[in-house]
Image (cartoon, rainbow, N blue to C red):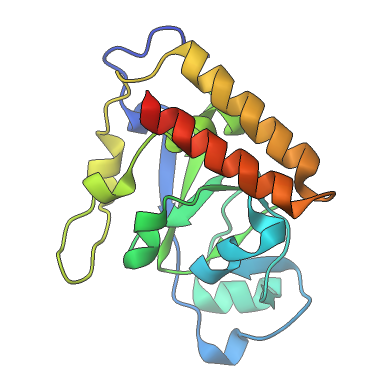
Length: 193
C-alpha cells in the first residue's frame, strides 16, 4: 500500500492505470437492461450517481460489447469526463460493477497500492481544468494525467474527504438534500486547503 501520510514525489499514474472509453453506436443505445451498464457523461448527473455509478440510461449485452471492441472498467474504477466542458465539472464516480464508458470518458483503475475510495478522494482534490489542453474543446491526455504530482495532499486531507464521501453514501438513498450539502461542503473544504 502507498504511504498516504507522505505523497512527496508520488504521481497519479503510480496509483492507477487509465482506460479510455469507446464509441457508442446509436444502434446499441436505449436498452434499459442487459449484461452491463454503458454510461455517458450525462449519467454522472443522475441524483443516484452522485457518489457511485448506481444506474445507467443504457445497457448492453456481452455480444454487443464485443462488437464495439469495448472492455469494461472493473468494479471500483473511478470514472470521469475527459473531453468537453463536462471535464471542468470535476465529477468523479466509483463504478459498482464492471461498466462500459463512452469515448468522452476515462476510467482510473486503482492498483494494489490504494483503495478505490482513497483514489477517488485524491481525484476530488485535482482540478481537471488545470490539466486540460485545447481552448475550444478542452480535453485531457492520459500521459498528462499520469504525471500529476500529489505533493499537495496529506493523509488528513484524504481521510477528511473520505469521511465526507462516506456520509454522502449513507445519505444517498435517504435524502438528496443532504448529498448536495455534503458535496458542497467537501468542495469548499478542499478549496480552502
